Length: 440
Image (cartoon, rainbow, N blue to C red; front, side):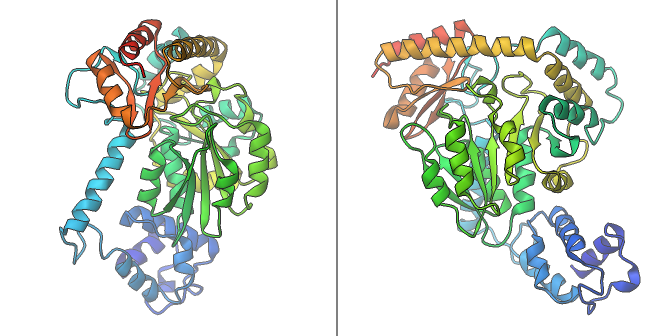
């Protein structure tokens, strides 16, 4: 382990070889605060386990650091002493199940069967990209023999202009979820906690587990996020609060006054991530970006997958303070956003007027389906996203199975409810027909 430490310090941190020896102190080896942070990132990437800079600050010599790393990695797969114990197998099974949820492969009632005629489980946009975006994709694909721009400069500049920010406040990645993963990685540490509402986006739990966070779930109130309870759940160990707004899977959204009160109650030492994956469908789509300049601990996460219809391209972005953006960029895999995806996103911003017209069509369909469900006797809260939530409780899986039998895939949350994406009018009518046969 010491040899790996030595190699990283010389090759990546560019420390003089003469400064590196087992008994050298951190200070003598040139490990100031910034260099220690850079070392923690490099070690995390090499070892596949989160090493926070705080872990290293209390260690006196390079030998102490190497010993700490030996102990930190002792139980990892492939390390000496690793066993296939039932507990380890159970943990691996939980992680696999979490990744299955995260990757969206667990949303069918009959996995491995034929694709449903009406896919309403994944919150996808039913429209293909506009002609101008498809043209940009075609042009970029002709250059597929070239590597993409690793800094995504054109897209970051376009997003900066769109929001009236400088490009150093924009991070781009292969979907907003990869950026959230990077954010969790750079903020992880011993005993660190992350808080979020529940039910909410189930990827939060998976990402938190992978980064070594302790998760704190705060139950939703009847009308959405219980922001008072969420603020009360923040303590000295809480590094992050993840707030999905509008919330997935319920579609409910918190307004500006409530968010301002919440942000005022959260310590500035705790980062608040406003996950606005569905914001274009909300009544106040510009809310998060508008609050950025007043709250340095606020991070806005957005995506091109939903309203912009680029789910297959995998493009998302964060808006935040430049220092935090820089830290996130260090953890994002280089070249992960293809030139085709970058070109599609830039073209989508230019076609926003056309795309937002489609958003209005989807919202109108969503409201039509909700009115029909209410008439059938279902309890359906108002939604500000491209889906509806049916709080069916114990009936959730039974209802989802009945829909699947009718060729309609919906997303069950066992014991809680069912989420139904708003699709085409044909998709939605097929769902309503299935719902009528299985009304409360």
